[in-house]
Amino acid sequence: KAGVTQTPRYLIKTRGQQVTLSCSPISGHRSVSWYQQTPGQGLQFLFEYFSETQRNKGNFPGRFSGRQFSNSRSEMNVSTLELGDSALYLCASSLAGPPADTQYFGPGTRLTVL
Amino acid sequence: GNSVTQMEGPVTLSEEAFLTINCTYTATGYPSLFWYVQYPGEGLQLLLKATKADDKGSNKGFEATYRKETTSFHLEKGSVQVSDSAVYFCALSGGNTGKLIFGQGTTLQVKP
Image (cartoon, rainbow over all chains, first blue to last red; front, side, top):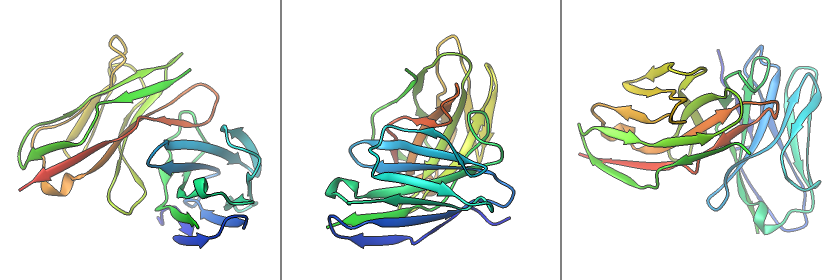
């Protein structure tokens, strides 16, 4: 079974631009969660989608948004990029979703904001 | 709120040494507990998990036991290899927030 895939793997953007990241979950998984990883803040939860609905949201500004499609693929969008948005963005999928289900992570998208 | 605390790193060991990485948690209810590993330049890989008190998770020679009385989930391995060099994250999942809460990560370096 193929794992979680994320595209692109690397992105370089400038301040003020916007960016869209994509995540394809493991086949059959209906829940997709997004996390931001930075050296200073560690791993922080952004949001979780299940059956095209956002079920949970972390403490991030409204510039961070996402969506999920009927095939469970998910996209994350960051508008008006700031230098502090430079991070590794990780996507995770699970069968029916947290809290009890195991989440499986993709390789991440490394975003650099200049 | 829920939180996870891991021992500070980096941890440097010689090959075949015994490994312990401490993890304690604060949570309401009965969270599930996980250890994830991150190799350089990669995402997180699930190493092991435990879903209830006294459960022992194990994988690839690593073990951790869910201790509710001490709110701990320490990671152990009897004999580490150079290939075990990575960052290890302890995490919990519980309540209805739908998210994993991670510790700050512990870097393990194993020298030949």
